[in-house]
Image (cartoon, rainbow, N blue to C red; front, side, top):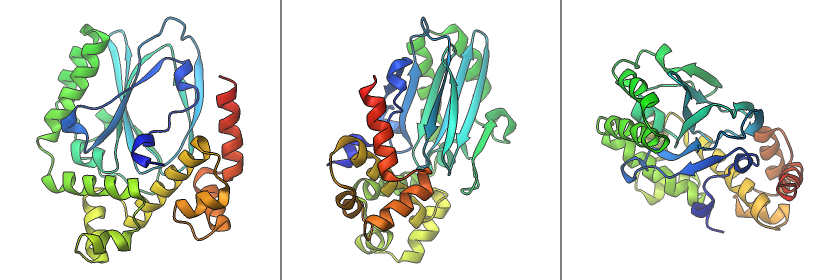
Length: 270
């Protein structure tokens, strides 16, 4: 299975509440995984709760209610349940690991779940966020998405070039599940250098990032293939099925079998 094809695992309810995935502009692809937008609000008068999984990424969500707009930044390293107000228009930017650090200048503690108003951070003025917020209500749905991406593109011009280099390197390593030691050897630097650079530019250790990639790949296998748990464990780089089960349960708060059964039930009930 090619992990690049299944890099994003949408929640089961997303198709039911009108959420559409939009690819980022090419100039943002090093830092932005995708954008989620709910364009159809006609039948959306309810709240939906979804389980969100940690993978070292983070999100910036614009909630647009007529002339009032909120910009909420969300970073999580543990499983959380998120409640969506589907009657409100959302434009949510899903960053790759290190993307928010490179573009927004946010240096977040990688051990905590954090949800903040972007205006509560010291970087909001230098990001020229207010002009974007002022223009969004007057724009059409498509123009709003384009404006958000243009704003991020402007921020990307200020980002340090090494951020792009390490983000691109990590994307390839995560897609192929390359362990940290092998990644360092393949690129001609020491494990200590890898540790220092990923910490500096992406905000996580190599082991953390590799662990998140393993869990994401395992979730893909569990949903998209009939492979046995032991085969999935080996494919994702775990020592054996017991190691896989323990790591998966620690990250997702359920066993691989429980996860597969729940997801298959959701798919069959669509």
